[in-house]
Image (tube, rainbow, N blue to C red):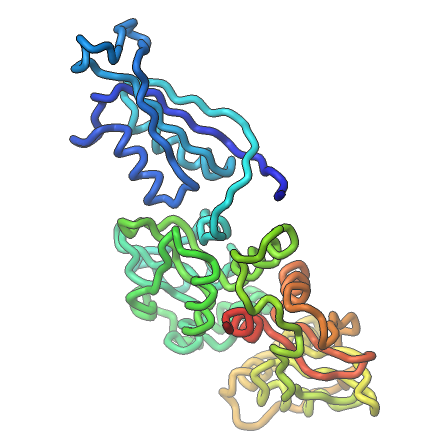
Length: 411
């Protein structure tokens, strides 16, 4: 038996004749709860009762036409009840609303509503692109829905900024630059005069809030999508879900579920099943100019530093290289480095130093027979995109989030 979790119990006491926008109030509350993906709602009809007005309501045979008492009951996680409470409060003109603590075991599929981020950063279609980038960096998010009134008009991702706005660096690397150099990058990208609707992906693909997590995983893996807005049945934006959110939910569920029917079948795979073996490598004394050349050529944007026996000694990310020269306060060299990393310059700048000078020595690794559930747990806990796979310390390859997602989605 699974362990009960803490919940809130919301009970709404109203009269059967109460209306909201022309329909029975209890029906409107249930429909609102359904659209928002609440765990469930039940409606009970009483046979006798009275409210604050002391008017007696009864189902006795001679008084069938009376306004009978009705109870709407909703049980869900505390944050979701707390978010729904103001909605119900605005709908009820006469009646009572009761909220109680409780515990429950939910026999439900794992749904997007359970894993999405509800506090969504959004921009308007007319928001200047410089403000969009500032918001993404400030909130440390990689995508933002673009709104036109209450309608989702599109979405802007890091990929849109790179491909359509000619932003020189990925968002995670933009954060490594000093503010003045970031402004120079924005100016070089030609952001002036551009607004959100000029570069957004439209229409934005969305997920309904009742979507099963496994189905969402298959959509993301099949379409190579990293983030999706989550909507109610009527299209209202309720949240956003990322590839990391989905992986984190699966990792949590795999650690506590007494049964695995809610989990993807690919979870029984191992790191070996998602292995990427074409990994650039170098020795610790390799010149940084050669390291830069490998970083530019590889989609992994990292070089594993090994000895003669392929024993792992360290790792060099592209941001390790950039951060190193930012700290040396070499603005001219940093500018050239940025152009090289974004393939905007034919020749590579000559860099002083070796891989040993910039490499990260604390390399997180997994064995090839590590269950995929454990790999996911490490990726999520350490907030990393890729994990190095090694056997007895010797490099075998790398597993990244995209490969994990595709492995999970396989039947």
